[in-house]
Length: 168
Image 1 (cartoon, rainbow, N blue to C red):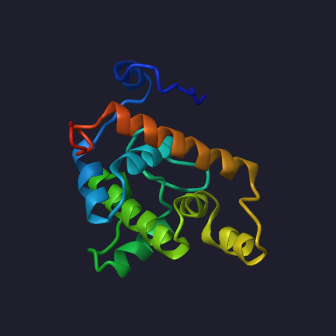
Image 2 (cartoon, rainbow, N blue to C red; image 1 turned 135 degrees about the horizontal axis):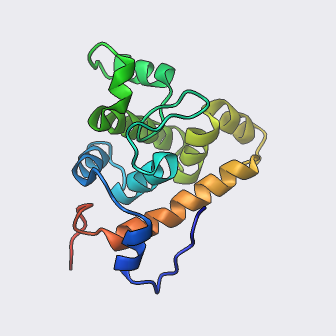
């Protein structure tokens, strides 16, 4: 269940509903990939609720729910070490690969919402929608994008120091 917290809710209340784990890993890989740390935290919350051992029925693994095929491609493209499936349950490796992939999608589409749609529904679907001059066609993907955009605001407001935002 996704609880919509209002901007008037105190940060401590939001932190009860949306904890932040692996803050340093999130911050470091967000900065390395020119992503908003709150965006990366929101994706992780949505994908795995910060559970490094999460697995989906589609075979996605880890904090950012990467499929082994996608992760192996990222490892090869970024000249990483030889890929092992167990890498995906390592928070640092999983977030490094996921942040790189998300930044790749942002660069490809030039739009954060489309990048998030591609992260959820796949590049093939987003490419097809773009070629047909259509918006996001899957209701579940629209809801996914909206949820992450909302959570991004919550994480930015609730964890400014942990995510590296200036406090003043």
